[in-house]
Image (tube, rainbow, N blue to C red; front, side, top):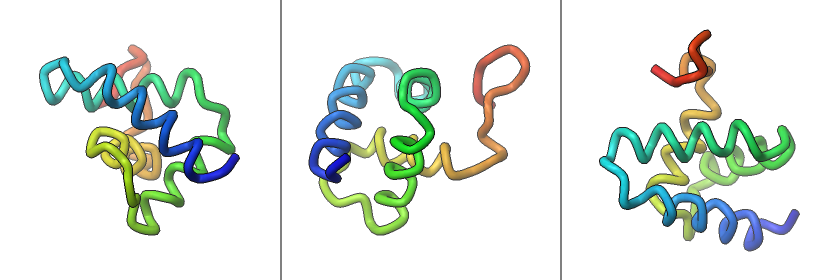
Length: 81
């Protein structure tokens, strides 16, 4: 997928959850991407964030970092730490 489309999609998700309290918004964006984006899309987001993340909503940047961090994998209860 082209980066511009991926950025637009990630930003739409981040915009939706931006009204939530900050910690929950961060968790929900990451959880949504894990649940609904295929691995190639998640990998593209991670790589894009690592390259600077130009144009991404801050919640999407945080999610990209969380997805890159194996310590942020969902726990047995299905939530992140």
